[in-house]
Image (cartoon, rainbow, N blue to C red; front, side, top):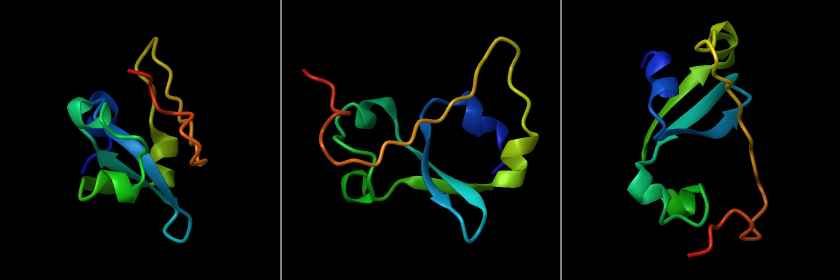
Length: 85
């Protein structure tokens, strides 16, 4: 998969850093599914479309003018990421 669709479709989320392969794995989680998940963990996601992008390819990306690309990885299982209903 080309890298650009990953950054133009908000359903693609960074999921796992694969250091041996020097890649970042993204999973596609539709908004309606994302809103029901407690965590973006394999136990909650189940089978999701995934792709890995080499870190070297990510380093080559140029942001869309006016946009910022920011990843926040949160690895604690304390329900702090769950939105109240």
